[in-house]
Length: 98
Image (cartoon, rainbow, N blue to C red):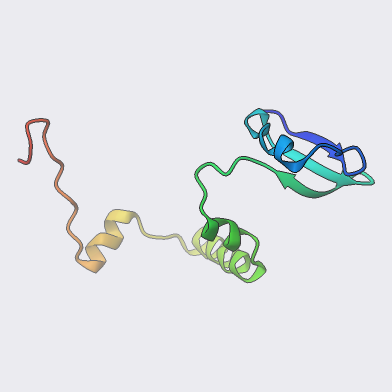
C-alpha cells in the first residue's frame, strides 16, 4: 500500500473521485507541505473507533495504561477470566455440539 499526497490547491477533482481510490492507499491532503487531512479506507473501523481515536482525553488514558502495563506488568486473558470466574466457551465439533 502506498501513501499518496496531494496539495490542497491541486486537489480539484470531486471528493467522491478521491474516495473511490482508497483501495490504492491513503491520500494525505497537504497545505504548504503540511498534512491537514487524510482520505483512507474505513475497513475494520466503526464510528466509535474513529471518534475515540481523535479524543485527546481517551488517548491520554490509553497512554497511561500502556505505561502502567510496561512498568507493572499485567494479566493474561486467562488470568482475568479466572479472577472474574468466567468459564471459557466450549468449542463445537464439526458434527455439532459435544
